[in-house]
Amino acid sequence: MLAPAPLAILALMSGTELLGGAIGVTMLALGLASVLAWTLTRAHRDRSLVLFGAWCGLYGARLVAEQEPIVETLGVSSLVADYFIAFVTYAINVPIGLFVESVIGKGWKQSIRRVWQLQAVYAVA
Image 1 (cartoon, rainbow, N blue to C red):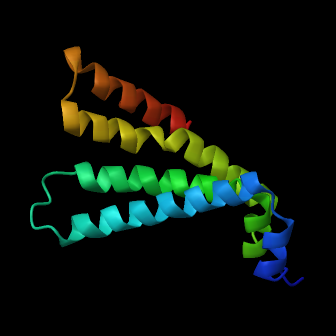
Image 2 (image 1 turned 90 degrees about the horizontal axis):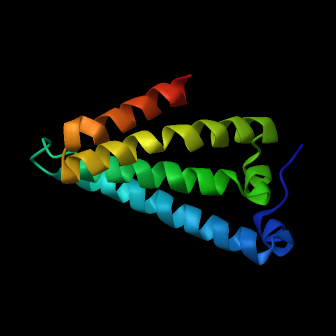
């Protein structure tokens, strides 16, 4: 089955779906730009930029995947989109936790580190 034309989908989308899609694409682009900027830097010891980019990219991809007309236009089944959304919902906390740790440190008795480690285990389980 052929996907509907993109302009026909835009006519069927509500304002909320259009706004969610636009924010999602913007976040996805910001994430990709951050990762690209990190790859172009010489000092790869500071992971803040790549972690921020990973978080932005995941958040943007999840927002795009939540817009049903966009998912239909891309030809992705709703079941795959639902599994993707569920995975990203739990996995997105790991890069932001690592980002916070890289910016402010490990925390009192490594509390920040333990939070993102627990979240990583929960995301995989």
